[in-house]
Length: 291
Ligand code: NDP
Image (cartoon, rainbow, N blue to C red; front, side):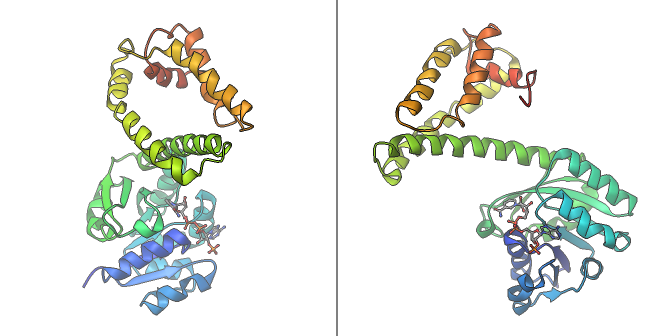
């Protein structure tokens, strides 16, 4: 049969992960702080452990998916001794620094460590659209790749355990930029009673068209040549002021939009006005930061 696996953390995501392992026929042990969240999984055949240590002891592979890094430490530290000789895969969202610290902590316990980032929402887990990013111990990843494949496509990014979190937060940053832009667009059109559902196909088509410019922007970022443009940055900075003024005219907030204006102004002041928007990436990597 399939190898056993343990899932610690049965929130919306953890329950989806455990369910995917059960669907594939893996003997699955589970633990959650609020025990009742294991009930439906138990009815599907999962073994409910009384403690994190008991859950970890049930399998060579433990997948952890808790709210945040603080919860991971709180749950795993009392069970540390049980991790020796086993593999810990941490799919909790966090920073690259947190992943590297947890990797060092796990190594200190004699455990193999793989960090991960889930690029999917719970209903996608186990389906063709789910991607899970991994980094850390290549041997541990390869050894459990077939089991982890139950969750979705698995991509190992490298030995540095921080890489999966880095890619994860980068992709989420892009996502929130898109959502923020979409919400601003809908707030503007709703200010004139245009139903969001009526306007949204136009937004989606527009974003799709603009997405086609990403590869060219990426090339400019990599080469440092920001000269190619039919839409110079100075013009864009001038037009951007209209996005803010129009929002104020319509009684719509500008808090999502102000930071980009500040960055565009900084780019013009730094002498990048004749070039492409791609110069903003280098600017983001220099002060002022975290303003
Ligand atoms: P939920 O809020 O549904 O679940 C949170 C889980 O963390 C629960 O199991 C909860 O236990 C546990 N928990 C929180 N604090 C503690 C603590 N101090 N001690 C012990 N357990 C604790 O979140 P999700 O399941 O949706 O998310 C889990 C992780 O997956 C997060 O890092 C999230 O960013 C990531 N993720 C989620 C996605 C999603 O769309 N849902 C998508 C991609 C990643 P209890 O049940 O007892 O409260």
